[in-house]
Image (tube, rainbow, N blue to C red):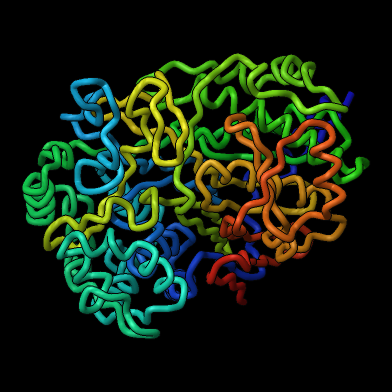
Length: 558
Protein backbone atom coordinates (compact mmCIF):
# COMPACT_ATOMS: atom_id res chain seq x y z
CA UNK A 1 0.00 0.00 0.00
CA UNK A 2 2.84 2.34 0.90
CA UNK A 3 4.52 1.72 -2.46
CA UNK A 4 1.20 2.39 -4.25
CA UNK A 5 0.80 5.72 -2.45
CA UNK A 6 4.37 6.59 -3.45
CA UNK A 7 3.53 5.73 -7.06
CA UNK A 8 0.43 7.95 -7.01
CA UNK A 9 2.48 10.80 -5.59
CA UNK A 10 5.09 10.42 -8.30
CA UNK A 11 2.48 10.37 -11.06
CA UNK A 12 0.86 13.51 -9.65
CA UNK A 13 4.24 15.17 -9.13
CA UNK A 14 5.46 14.50 -12.66
CA UNK A 15 2.15 15.56 -14.21
CA UNK A 16 2.06 18.77 -12.22
CA UNK A 17 5.62 19.69 -13.15
CA UNK A 18 5.91 18.44 -16.73
CA UNK A 19 7.43 21.21 -18.78
CA UNK A 20 7.22 23.61 -15.84
CA UNK A 21 9.50 26.63 -16.27
CA UNK A 22 8.11 28.94 -13.60
CA UNK A 23 10.89 31.38 -12.67
CA UNK A 24 12.07 31.38 -9.07
CA UNK A 25 12.00 34.43 -6.85
CA UNK A 26 15.79 34.35 -6.47
CA UNK A 27 19.00 32.39 -6.97
CA UNK A 28 21.18 30.62 -4.40
CA UNK A 29 24.65 29.13 -4.05
CA UNK A 30 26.37 27.21 -1.26
CA UNK A 31 30.03 26.28 -1.57
CA UNK A 32 32.99 25.41 0.63
CA UNK A 33 34.71 28.81 0.26
CA UNK A 34 33.31 32.36 0.31
CA UNK A 35 35.46 33.41 -2.66
CA UNK A 36 34.10 30.54 -4.75
CA UNK A 37 30.53 31.40 -3.78
CA UNK A 38 31.20 35.02 -4.75
CA UNK A 39 32.61 33.90 -8.11
CA UNK A 40 29.44 31.96 -8.89
CA UNK A 41 27.23 34.85 -7.82
CA UNK A 42 29.15 37.26 -10.05
CA UNK A 43 28.64 35.02 -13.08
CA UNK A 44 24.91 34.72 -12.43
CA UNK A 45 24.68 38.49 -12.11
CA UNK A 46 26.43 38.82 -15.48
CA UNK A 47 23.61 36.84 -17.12
CA UNK A 48 25.02 33.35 -16.79
CA UNK A 49 22.96 30.37 -15.74
CA UNK A 50 23.57 27.78 -13.02
CA UNK A 51 25.86 25.81 -15.33
CA UNK A 52 28.05 28.85 -16.02
CA UNK A 53 28.12 29.50 -12.27
CA UNK A 54 29.18 25.88 -11.70
CA UNK A 55 32.19 26.47 -13.96
CA UNK A 56 33.07 29.61 -12.01
CA UNK A 57 32.68 27.98 -8.59
CA UNK A 58 34.60 24.82 -9.51
CA UNK A 59 37.46 26.81 -11.06
CA UNK A 60 37.62 29.21 -8.10
CA UNK A 61 37.73 26.28 -5.68
CA UNK A 62 40.63 24.89 -7.72
CA UNK A 63 42.53 28.07 -6.84
CA UNK A 64 41.49 28.85 -3.25
CA UNK A 65 40.92 25.32 -1.95
CA UNK A 66 43.86 23.37 -3.47
CA UNK A 67 43.79 20.91 -0.60
CA UNK A 68 40.33 19.65 -1.67
CA UNK A 69 39.97 19.90 -5.44
CA UNK A 70 41.58 21.38 -8.54
CA UNK A 71 42.28 21.20 -12.24
CA UNK A 72 44.40 18.14 -11.50
CA UNK A 73 41.43 16.22 -10.07
CA UNK A 74 38.00 14.94 -11.04
CA UNK A 75 34.39 14.81 -9.95
CA UNK A 76 30.71 14.52 -10.80
CA UNK A 77 28.31 17.31 -11.82
CA UNK A 78 24.61 16.46 -11.37
CA UNK A 79 22.50 18.76 -13.56
CA UNK A 80 18.83 19.65 -13.91
CA UNK A 81 17.90 21.81 -16.91
CA UNK A 82 14.68 23.71 -16.29
CA UNK A 83 13.48 24.25 -19.86
CA UNK A 84 13.05 20.56 -20.63
CA UNK A 85 13.54 18.81 -17.29
CA UNK A 86 16.67 17.03 -18.48
CA UNK A 87 18.67 15.47 -15.65
CA UNK A 88 22.16 14.16 -16.32
CA UNK A 89 25.38 13.38 -14.51
CA UNK A 90 28.57 14.74 -16.04
CA UNK A 91 31.22 12.15 -15.24
CA UNK A 92 34.52 14.01 -14.97
CA UNK A 93 36.18 11.29 -12.90
CA UNK A 94 39.89 10.69 -13.45
CA UNK A 95 41.09 7.77 -15.59
CA UNK A 96 44.08 5.47 -15.11
CA UNK A 97 46.96 6.14 -17.54
CA UNK A 98 47.19 3.65 -20.40
CA UNK A 99 50.49 2.30 -19.05
CA UNK A 100 48.80 1.45 -15.72
CA UNK A 101 48.79 -2.21 -14.67
CA UNK A 102 47.01 -4.10 -11.86
CA UNK A 103 50.32 -4.73 -10.06
CA UNK A 104 52.00 -1.36 -10.59
CA UNK A 105 52.17 -0.62 -6.86
CA UNK A 106 53.58 -4.01 -5.83
CA UNK A 107 57.15 -5.29 -5.68
CA UNK A 108 58.43 -8.59 -7.08
CA UNK A 109 57.31 -10.36 -3.92
CA UNK A 110 53.76 -9.07 -4.37
CA UNK A 111 53.96 -6.65 -1.47
CA UNK A 112 52.33 -3.22 -1.79
CA UNK A 113 54.93 -0.44 -2.03
CA UNK A 114 54.34 2.10 0.75
CA UNK A 115 53.15 5.52 -0.44
CA UNK A 116 53.60 4.65 -4.15
CA UNK A 117 49.90 5.18 -4.87
CA UNK A 118 49.75 8.29 -2.68
CA UNK A 119 52.70 10.59 -3.31
CA UNK A 120 54.34 11.83 -6.49
CA UNK A 121 53.27 11.60 -10.13
CA UNK A 122 52.95 7.80 -10.21
CA UNK A 123 49.94 8.22 -7.90
CA UNK A 124 48.12 10.52 -10.34
CA UNK A 125 45.30 9.51 -12.65
CA UNK A 126 44.44 11.61 -15.72
CA UNK A 127 42.42 14.66 -14.55
CA UNK A 128 38.81 15.23 -15.61
CA UNK A 129 37.88 18.63 -14.17
CA UNK A 130 39.17 20.79 -17.09
CA UNK A 131 37.20 18.69 -19.59
CA UNK A 132 34.17 18.89 -17.32
CA UNK A 133 34.31 22.69 -17.16
CA UNK A 134 34.66 23.00 -20.93
CA UNK A 135 31.78 20.56 -21.46
CA UNK A 136 29.50 22.45 -19.07
CA UNK A 137 30.19 25.77 -20.77
CA UNK A 138 29.82 24.45 -24.30
CA UNK A 139 26.79 22.21 -23.86
CA UNK A 140 24.79 23.89 -21.10
CA UNK A 141 26.05 27.42 -20.39
CA UNK A 142 25.01 30.81 -21.74
CA UNK A 143 28.36 32.54 -21.38
CA UNK A 144 31.71 31.71 -22.90
CA UNK A 145 34.11 29.52 -20.98
CA UNK A 146 36.47 32.50 -20.78
CA UNK A 147 33.82 34.62 -19.03
CA UNK A 148 33.08 31.93 -16.45
CA UNK A 149 36.76 31.27 -15.76
CA UNK A 150 37.60 34.97 -15.33
CA UNK A 151 37.07 35.08 -11.52
CA UNK A 152 39.34 32.06 -11.00
CA UNK A 153 42.01 33.56 -13.25
CA UNK A 154 41.98 36.76 -11.17
CA UNK A 155 42.26 34.77 -7.93
CA UNK A 156 45.20 32.80 -9.31
CA UNK A 157 47.09 35.77 -10.74
CA UNK A 158 46.31 38.36 -8.07
CA UNK A 159 46.26 35.94 -5.16
CA UNK A 160 43.95 35.22 -2.24
CA UNK A 161 44.65 35.62 1.50
CA UNK A 162 45.79 32.53 3.42
CA UNK A 163 42.98 31.89 5.90
CA UNK A 164 43.16 29.79 9.06
CA UNK A 165 41.95 26.62 7.33
CA UNK A 166 44.49 26.93 4.51
CA UNK A 167 47.31 27.52 6.99
CA UNK A 168 46.28 24.61 9.22
CA UNK A 169 46.19 22.18 6.30
CA UNK A 170 49.45 23.49 4.86
CA UNK A 171 51.03 22.98 8.29
CA UNK A 172 49.74 19.40 8.63
CA UNK A 173 51.02 18.57 5.12
CA UNK A 174 54.16 20.68 5.25
CA UNK A 175 56.55 17.79 4.59
CA UNK A 176 54.57 16.70 1.54
CA UNK A 177 54.59 20.22 0.08
CA UNK A 178 58.28 20.77 0.83
CA UNK A 179 59.32 17.66 -1.11
CA UNK A 180 58.90 19.25 -4.53
CA UNK A 181 60.17 22.74 -5.43
CA UNK A 182 57.12 23.61 -7.58
CA UNK A 183 54.66 22.64 -4.83
CA UNK A 184 56.62 24.51 -2.19
CA UNK A 185 56.87 27.64 -4.37
CA UNK A 186 53.14 27.59 -5.11
CA UNK A 187 51.67 26.85 -1.68
CA UNK A 188 54.34 27.88 0.83
CA UNK A 189 56.48 30.95 1.42
CA UNK A 190 60.20 30.41 2.00
CA UNK A 191 59.48 26.71 2.59
CA UNK A 192 57.20 27.62 5.49
CA UNK A 193 53.47 28.00 6.10
CA UNK A 194 52.36 31.45 4.88
CA UNK A 195 51.64 34.09 7.49
CA UNK A 196 47.97 34.90 8.21
CA UNK A 197 46.37 36.69 5.24
CA UNK A 198 49.55 36.47 3.15
CA UNK A 199 48.65 36.40 -0.54
CA UNK A 200 48.83 32.99 -2.23
CA UNK A 201 49.66 33.82 -5.87
CA UNK A 202 49.61 31.03 -8.47
CA UNK A 203 50.83 32.66 -11.67
CA UNK A 204 51.52 29.38 -13.47
CA UNK A 205 48.06 28.06 -12.66
CA UNK A 206 46.66 31.35 -13.96
CA UNK A 207 48.41 30.76 -17.30
CA UNK A 208 46.92 27.26 -17.53
CA UNK A 209 43.46 28.63 -16.76
CA UNK A 210 43.96 31.19 -19.52
CA UNK A 211 44.92 28.43 -21.96
CA UNK A 212 41.75 26.55 -20.98
CA UNK A 213 39.69 29.73 -21.36
CA UNK A 214 41.10 30.46 -24.82
CA UNK A 215 41.21 26.98 -26.34
CA UNK A 216 38.68 24.96 -24.33
CA UNK A 217 39.61 21.42 -23.33
CA UNK A 218 42.38 21.37 -25.95
CA UNK A 219 44.13 24.12 -24.01
CA UNK A 220 44.70 21.63 -21.20
CA UNK A 221 44.78 18.20 -22.85
CA UNK A 222 46.86 19.15 -25.89
CA UNK A 223 49.48 21.73 -26.76
CA UNK A 224 51.95 23.44 -24.45
CA UNK A 225 50.18 22.69 -21.16
CA UNK A 226 49.89 18.96 -21.91
CA UNK A 227 53.50 18.83 -23.08
CA UNK A 228 54.70 20.53 -19.89
CA UNK A 229 52.69 18.27 -17.58
CA UNK A 230 53.76 15.04 -19.26
CA UNK A 231 57.42 16.05 -19.32
CA UNK A 232 57.31 16.87 -15.59
CA UNK A 233 55.50 13.64 -14.73
CA UNK A 234 57.89 11.45 -16.72
CA UNK A 235 60.97 13.22 -15.37
CA UNK A 236 59.82 12.40 -11.84
CA UNK A 237 59.09 8.73 -12.52
CA UNK A 238 55.46 8.85 -13.61
CA UNK A 239 53.88 7.00 -16.55
CA UNK A 240 51.71 9.64 -18.22
CA UNK A 241 51.85 9.96 -22.00
CA UNK A 242 50.54 12.77 -24.21
CA UNK A 243 48.00 10.26 -25.58
CA UNK A 244 46.53 9.79 -22.07
CA UNK A 245 45.56 13.44 -22.00
CA UNK A 246 44.48 13.65 -25.64
CA UNK A 247 42.18 10.63 -25.24
CA UNK A 248 40.43 11.80 -22.07
CA UNK A 249 36.67 12.14 -22.59
CA UNK A 250 33.73 13.33 -20.49
CA UNK A 251 30.87 10.83 -20.18
CA UNK A 252 27.25 11.88 -19.73
CA UNK A 253 25.52 9.26 -17.59
CA UNK A 254 21.92 8.66 -16.58
CA UNK A 255 21.66 9.43 -12.86
CA UNK A 256 20.36 6.94 -10.31
CA UNK A 257 16.70 7.80 -9.55
CA UNK A 258 14.36 6.26 -6.97
CA UNK A 259 11.60 7.12 -4.48
CA UNK A 260 11.54 7.16 -0.70
CA UNK A 261 8.46 8.07 1.38
CA UNK A 262 6.99 10.65 -0.99
CA UNK A 263 10.34 11.96 -2.16
CA UNK A 264 11.88 11.52 -5.61
CA UNK A 265 15.66 11.25 -5.27
CA UNK A 266 18.17 11.69 -8.09
CA UNK A 267 21.81 10.93 -7.36
CA UNK A 268 25.18 9.95 -8.77
CA UNK A 269 25.56 6.88 -10.98
CA UNK A 270 28.58 4.56 -11.26
CA UNK A 271 31.53 4.96 -11.24
CA UNK A 272 30.20 6.66 -8.14
CA UNK A 273 28.83 4.13 -5.70
CA UNK A 274 26.93 6.95 -4.01
CA UNK A 275 23.52 6.75 -5.65
CA UNK A 276 23.26 2.94 -5.57
CA UNK A 277 24.41 2.65 -1.96
CA UNK A 278 22.04 5.45 -0.97
CA UNK A 279 19.12 3.80 -2.79
CA UNK A 280 19.68 0.39 -1.23
CA UNK A 281 20.00 1.78 2.29
CA UNK A 282 16.87 3.94 1.97
CA UNK A 283 14.85 1.11 0.43
CA UNK A 284 15.74 -1.03 3.45
CA UNK A 285 14.79 1.79 5.83
CA UNK A 286 11.47 2.36 4.07
CA UNK A 287 10.16 -0.71 5.92
CA UNK A 288 10.35 1.15 9.26
CA UNK A 289 8.73 4.27 10.69
CA UNK A 290 11.97 5.91 11.80
CA UNK A 291 10.30 9.08 13.09
CA UNK A 292 8.32 7.04 15.64
CA UNK A 293 11.42 5.39 17.14
CA UNK A 294 13.66 6.39 20.04
CA UNK A 295 17.04 7.84 19.00
CA UNK A 296 19.03 4.66 19.72
CA UNK A 297 16.54 2.47 17.86
CA UNK A 298 16.59 4.81 14.89
CA UNK A 299 20.38 4.89 14.79
CA UNK A 300 20.50 1.08 15.07
CA UNK A 301 18.30 0.62 12.01
CA UNK A 302 20.16 3.23 9.97
CA UNK A 303 23.46 1.52 10.84
CA UNK A 304 22.12 -1.91 9.85
CA UNK A 305 20.89 -0.54 6.51
CA UNK A 306 24.25 1.13 5.87
CA UNK A 307 26.12 -2.05 6.85
CA UNK A 308 24.28 -4.03 4.17
CA UNK A 309 24.44 -1.34 1.49
CA UNK A 310 28.19 -0.83 1.97
CA UNK A 311 28.63 -4.61 1.88
CA UNK A 312 27.15 -4.64 -1.62
CA UNK A 313 29.17 -1.56 -2.56
CA UNK A 314 32.33 -3.53 -1.88
CA UNK A 315 31.12 -6.69 -3.63
CA UNK A 316 29.71 -5.35 -6.87
CA UNK A 317 30.58 -1.77 -7.78
CA UNK A 318 33.15 -0.29 -10.16
CA UNK A 319 33.52 1.56 -13.47
CA UNK A 320 30.45 0.63 -15.58
CA UNK A 321 32.58 0.80 -18.73
CA UNK A 322 34.67 -2.10 -17.38
CA UNK A 323 32.48 -4.19 -15.05
CA UNK A 324 28.90 -5.47 -15.12
CA UNK A 325 26.84 -4.62 -12.05
CA UNK A 326 23.40 -5.94 -10.99
CA UNK A 327 21.99 -2.41 -10.80
CA UNK A 328 18.29 -3.26 -11.08
CA UNK A 329 18.57 -6.00 -8.48
CA UNK A 330 20.42 -3.77 -6.01
CA UNK A 331 17.74 -1.09 -6.36
CA UNK A 332 14.69 -3.37 -6.28
CA UNK A 333 12.20 -3.45 -3.37
CA UNK A 334 12.39 -7.24 -3.38
CA UNK A 335 16.14 -7.17 -2.80
CA UNK A 336 15.65 -4.60 -0.03
CA UNK A 337 13.18 -7.03 1.57
CA UNK A 338 15.80 -9.77 1.43
CA UNK A 339 18.43 -7.55 3.03
CA UNK A 340 16.04 -6.20 5.68
CA UNK A 341 14.93 -9.71 6.66
CA UNK A 342 18.28 -10.33 8.35
CA UNK A 343 18.06 -7.24 10.58
CA UNK A 344 17.49 -7.98 14.26
CA UNK A 345 15.68 -5.07 15.90
CA UNK A 346 17.26 -5.90 19.26
CA UNK A 347 20.81 -6.82 18.29
CA UNK A 348 23.58 -5.55 16.04
CA UNK A 349 24.59 -7.76 13.13
CA UNK A 350 28.22 -8.79 13.02
CA UNK A 351 29.68 -7.68 9.70
CA UNK A 352 31.66 -10.94 9.72
CA UNK A 353 28.34 -12.79 9.50
CA UNK A 354 27.66 -11.20 6.12
CA UNK A 355 29.42 -12.74 3.15
CA UNK A 356 32.99 -11.58 3.56
CA UNK A 357 33.85 -8.85 1.10
CA UNK A 358 36.59 -6.26 0.81
CA UNK A 359 36.27 -2.69 1.96
CA UNK A 360 36.44 0.36 -0.24
CA UNK A 361 36.99 3.93 0.90
CA UNK A 362 38.00 7.26 -0.51
CA UNK A 363 39.72 10.14 1.21
CA UNK A 364 38.19 12.30 3.90
CA UNK A 365 38.62 15.41 1.80
CA UNK A 366 37.00 16.60 -1.46
CA UNK A 367 34.59 19.54 -1.91
CA UNK A 368 30.95 20.13 -2.83
CA UNK A 369 28.74 22.97 -4.02
CA UNK A 370 25.04 23.44 -4.79
CA UNK A 371 23.50 26.04 -7.12
CA UNK A 372 20.08 27.08 -8.42
CA UNK A 373 19.41 30.01 -10.76
CA UNK A 374 16.20 32.00 -11.21
CA UNK A 375 15.13 29.86 -14.16
CA UNK A 376 15.25 26.74 -11.98
CA UNK A 377 18.41 25.24 -13.48
CA UNK A 378 20.33 23.48 -10.76
CA UNK A 379 23.68 21.84 -10.11
CA UNK A 380 25.01 19.60 -7.36
CA UNK A 381 28.74 18.96 -7.82
CA UNK A 382 31.24 16.98 -5.78
CA UNK A 383 34.90 17.29 -6.79
CA UNK A 384 38.14 15.81 -5.47
CA UNK A 385 41.89 15.29 -5.72
CA UNK A 386 41.59 12.50 -3.08
CA UNK A 387 43.72 13.19 0.04
CA UNK A 388 44.61 16.71 1.17
CA UNK A 389 46.85 18.34 -1.48
CA UNK A 390 46.56 15.14 -3.53
CA UNK A 391 49.88 13.67 -4.65
CA UNK A 392 51.77 16.78 -3.52
CA UNK A 393 53.17 17.04 -7.05
CA UNK A 394 52.76 20.16 -9.19
CA UNK A 395 53.24 19.26 -12.87
CA UNK A 396 56.11 21.55 -13.85
CA UNK A 397 55.28 25.10 -14.86
CA UNK A 398 51.60 24.23 -15.48
CA UNK A 399 50.78 25.08 -11.87
CA UNK A 400 48.47 22.03 -11.78
CA UNK A 401 48.55 20.05 -8.52
CA UNK A 402 47.97 16.41 -9.41
CA UNK A 403 45.55 14.06 -7.70
CA UNK A 404 46.43 10.76 -6.04
CA UNK A 405 43.22 9.03 -7.10
CA UNK A 406 45.09 5.89 -8.20
CA UNK A 407 44.89 4.92 -4.53
CA UNK A 408 41.12 4.68 -4.95
CA UNK A 409 41.68 1.58 -7.07
CA UNK A 410 42.39 -1.84 -5.60
CA UNK A 411 46.18 -1.65 -5.72
CA UNK A 412 46.25 -5.39 -4.94
CA UNK A 413 43.58 -8.05 -4.48
CA UNK A 414 42.47 -7.55 -0.86
CA UNK A 415 45.38 -5.12 -0.40
CA UNK A 416 45.05 -2.15 1.94
CA UNK A 417 44.87 1.46 0.82
CA UNK A 418 46.01 4.51 2.79
CA UNK A 419 43.13 4.13 5.25
CA UNK A 420 43.98 0.52 6.14
CA UNK A 421 41.05 -0.71 4.08
CA UNK A 422 40.88 -3.45 1.48
CA UNK A 423 39.75 -3.30 -2.17
CA UNK A 424 38.81 -6.03 -4.67
CA UNK A 425 38.21 -7.23 -8.24
CA UNK A 426 35.54 -4.89 -9.66
CA UNK A 427 37.76 -1.95 -8.75
CA UNK A 428 41.16 -3.33 -9.84
CA UNK A 429 43.46 -1.09 -11.86
CA UNK A 430 43.10 -1.21 -15.66
CA UNK A 431 44.30 1.17 -18.40
CA UNK A 432 41.76 3.94 -18.98
CA UNK A 433 39.54 2.81 -16.12
CA UNK A 434 37.89 5.18 -13.65
CA UNK A 435 38.27 4.38 -9.93
CA UNK A 436 35.22 3.80 -7.77
CA UNK A 437 34.03 6.84 -5.83
CA UNK A 438 31.70 7.71 -2.96
CA UNK A 439 30.86 11.20 -4.23
CA UNK A 440 27.09 11.64 -3.98
CA UNK A 441 25.70 14.92 -5.40
CA UNK A 442 21.94 14.61 -4.97
CA UNK A 443 18.56 16.20 -5.72
CA UNK A 444 15.54 15.50 -3.50
CA UNK A 445 12.06 16.56 -4.66
CA UNK A 446 8.81 16.33 -2.74
CA UNK A 447 5.56 18.29 -2.37
CA UNK A 448 7.34 20.94 -0.30
CA UNK A 449 10.14 21.71 -2.72
CA UNK A 450 13.56 20.69 -4.02
CA UNK A 451 16.67 20.04 -1.97
CA UNK A 452 20.13 20.17 -3.59
CA UNK A 453 22.85 18.71 -1.41
CA UNK A 454 26.13 16.87 -1.10
CA UNK A 455 29.27 16.77 1.00
CA UNK A 456 32.94 15.82 1.04
CA UNK A 457 34.13 13.14 3.41
CA UNK A 458 35.32 10.01 1.61
CA UNK A 459 33.32 6.90 2.39
CA UNK A 460 31.32 8.96 4.92
CA UNK A 461 29.81 11.00 2.07
CA UNK A 462 27.02 8.49 1.47
CA UNK A 463 26.01 8.26 5.12
CA UNK A 464 26.06 12.07 5.41
CA UNK A 465 23.76 12.49 2.43
CA UNK A 466 21.49 9.73 3.75
CA UNK A 467 21.25 11.43 7.16
CA UNK A 468 20.57 14.73 5.40
CA UNK A 469 17.66 13.17 3.51
CA UNK A 470 16.27 11.54 6.66
CA UNK A 471 16.53 14.83 8.56
CA UNK A 472 14.81 16.68 5.73
CA UNK A 473 11.99 14.11 5.64
CA UNK A 474 11.47 14.45 9.41
CA UNK A 475 11.34 18.26 9.48
CA UNK A 476 7.86 19.76 9.84
CA UNK A 477 9.22 23.14 8.77
CA UNK A 478 12.31 22.99 6.57
CA UNK A 479 15.35 24.37 8.43
CA UNK A 480 18.26 24.19 6.01
CA UNK A 481 20.88 25.39 8.49
CA UNK A 482 19.81 22.75 11.00
CA UNK A 483 20.02 20.13 8.28
CA UNK A 484 23.67 20.87 7.37
CA UNK A 485 24.60 21.29 11.06
CA UNK A 486 23.02 18.09 12.41
CA UNK A 487 25.26 15.59 14.25
CA UNK A 488 26.58 12.67 12.21
CA UNK A 489 27.33 8.99 12.58
CA UNK A 490 28.64 6.42 10.16
CA UNK A 491 29.00 2.70 9.47
CA UNK A 492 30.51 1.21 6.32
CA UNK A 493 30.36 -2.57 6.91
CA UNK A 494 34.10 -2.92 7.63
CA UNK A 495 35.67 -2.04 9.96
CA UNK A 496 32.73 -3.22 12.07
CA UNK A 497 32.27 -0.08 14.13
CA UNK A 498 29.77 2.73 14.55
CA UNK A 499 31.62 6.02 14.28
CA UNK A 500 30.03 9.10 15.86
CA UNK A 501 31.03 12.74 15.99
CA UNK A 502 32.36 14.00 19.36
CA UNK A 503 30.01 15.81 21.73
CA UNK A 504 27.06 15.08 19.46
CA UNK A 505 25.02 12.30 21.05
CA UNK A 506 23.92 11.69 24.68
CA UNK A 507 25.95 9.09 26.53
CA UNK A 508 22.76 7.19 27.31
CA UNK A 509 22.10 6.70 23.58
CA UNK A 510 25.63 5.44 22.95
CA UNK A 511 25.40 3.13 25.96
CA UNK A 512 22.17 1.65 24.61
CA UNK A 513 23.79 1.03 21.24
CA UNK A 514 26.72 -0.71 22.90
CA UNK A 515 24.38 -2.89 24.95
CA UNK A 516 22.84 -4.32 21.78
CA UNK A 517 26.22 -5.13 20.30
CA UNK A 518 27.46 -2.08 18.40
CA UNK A 519 31.12 -1.16 18.70
CA UNK A 520 30.92 2.61 19.19
CA UNK A 521 33.92 4.77 18.31
CA UNK A 522 33.78 8.48 19.09
CA UNK A 523 35.80 10.33 16.45
CA UNK A 524 38.46 12.83 17.49
CA UNK A 525 36.91 15.48 15.27
CA UNK A 526 33.75 16.27 13.36
CA UNK A 527 33.63 15.52 9.65
CA UNK A 528 32.09 16.70 6.41
CA UNK A 529 31.32 20.08 4.89
CA UNK A 530 27.77 19.85 3.54
CA UNK A 531 26.54 22.52 1.13
CA UNK A 532 22.79 22.71 0.50
CA UNK A 533 20.21 24.75 -1.38
CA UNK A 534 16.45 24.39 -0.96
CA UNK A 535 13.68 25.73 -3.21
CA UNK A 536 10.31 26.29 -1.57
CA UNK A 537 7.74 25.08 -4.09
CA UNK A 538 4.94 27.29 -2.74
CA UNK A 539 6.80 30.62 -2.78
CA UNK A 540 9.49 29.96 -5.38
CA UNK A 541 12.03 31.22 -2.86
CA UNK A 542 15.50 29.64 -2.79
CA UNK A 543 17.60 29.29 0.37
CA UNK A 544 21.25 28.30 0.90
CA UNK A 545 23.20 26.95 3.87
CA UNK A 546 26.83 26.05 4.42
CA UNK A 547 28.08 23.55 6.99
CA UNK A 548 29.45 25.30 10.11
CA UNK A 549 32.19 22.65 10.22
CA UNK A 550 33.89 24.46 7.30
CA UNK A 551 34.55 28.03 6.20
CA UNK A 552 32.11 28.05 3.26
CA UNK A 553 29.21 30.36 2.58
CA UNK A 554 25.66 30.02 1.40
CA UNK A 555 24.00 33.03 -0.24
CA UNK A 556 20.58 33.70 -1.70
CA UNK A 557 19.69 36.97 -3.36
CA UNK A 558 16.95 38.62 -5.42
